[in-house]
Image: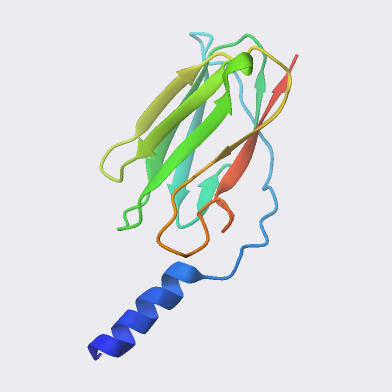
Length: 136
């Protein structure tokens, strides 16, 4: 493959069309024997699985996120300090990331990847986002 074709292939692969992202199946967290709601997630090429998580208010949560191997960087961002969910954490492919918080308010709260390469759509725009739904 010559350099020109390779460059066009890379540009095409990274740009992609805007994803028509709909939330997947709801994952309802259940507290472990230690009282923590643990959610195991995967992050990859513009997705989180699961991407719709239901947790209980006032019960500690631990997100354990494993990223598939790739050159594309990813993170997970939540910015709801009054609801007890504020973080911006890089997700590396070599080891799982653990994020702990306790939700303080009920409602639906978005998480997303805010990475963006040059003039291409952000990962969030390409569908890399989800919701944590907090219930009583």
